[in-house]
Image 1 (cartoon, helix red, strand yellow):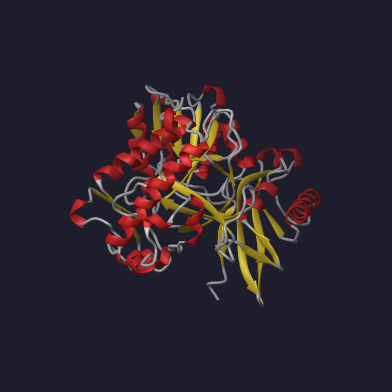
Image 2 (spheres, rainbow, N blue to C red):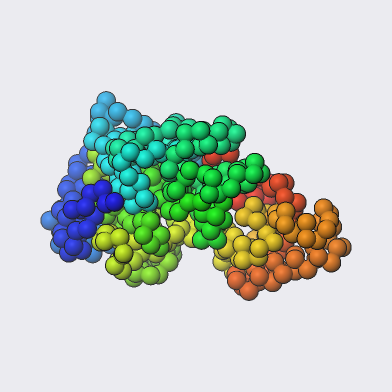
Length: 441
């Protein structure tokens, strides 16, 4: 199902013309109404933009700009025109505040309706929404998108796993939305109950808000009996609904380009990169009223592709988020992202997707140790419940895991094996994969 067929299948040249018209209007409004842009775009006139490629000459906007304008200094409308405020947590203690006009809320619902449809949803289906509600944009964004599409929405929110299982068994929804780590928690909880995947009503899962890998997708699909698609968003741009994978290919997320203009730039120079090359995602909001953003530097690492898609949409696709530029670890001179560690570990069937990376600092470089759970099958076949490093079968698996990481990532990481059920589980929110012990020093 394509929710906005006329726009989502627009020829690329027509889409670029629409983007240019909206970009010019954005520049005019931002200069006039937002003090930050009044200064930074002082020498830019809308008519100066002759093509979308001229976007590269405009300055970036960064999260620190929003923090400096806390709480409402970036608004392009009077505060009284807001009908909703969301916010995301910040590392400095200040929230990143996002305001929505009535038109913004309608836009929020529309792009999420598109995304749910991309992932297999249809009018009349039941949606089990296990994203958190509140200041976090996920729960309400998906909620109104589901209603806009014509779905029946169950606003479960996150946590209380036993209740989640009961509601899925009793209400029998066709689609679930939550973080990938929580979907895995639910799959493992169903398995512990003895509920087989083909006994679960779910057919589709829309997962996002944290990086994940294809190996983890395979675990979730098999455990819940679903086809899971990746959804992407960030509160500063609008929340979820910026892009989503289509169920036909599940090979990159279609960006809702008529509303969000996407670029990928070099992390060091800020210069635009060609299709297929990894860099920092940058978004310009083309139609938001309350909080327009020009070239917002997300920090997320991805790439873009305009290759044709089996679903018929002509919208650009962005690759799965590899990590964040500021989450990248430098292990003895090698750049490492947590998703690379996960992908390597899950090539070994004896290991589970329950892991974390412990980071410390040795001199000027990061040092990392990986803790990962073994499977119940591994313990049964080994005939022991012990994970003593002196046991041959434990030592052999640990060494294989370390060789796999070395071969995949290019540097050596120490691996510690943990018993099933001992690693932290998601309870609905984002799961912390990296424990940074550098700060404790």
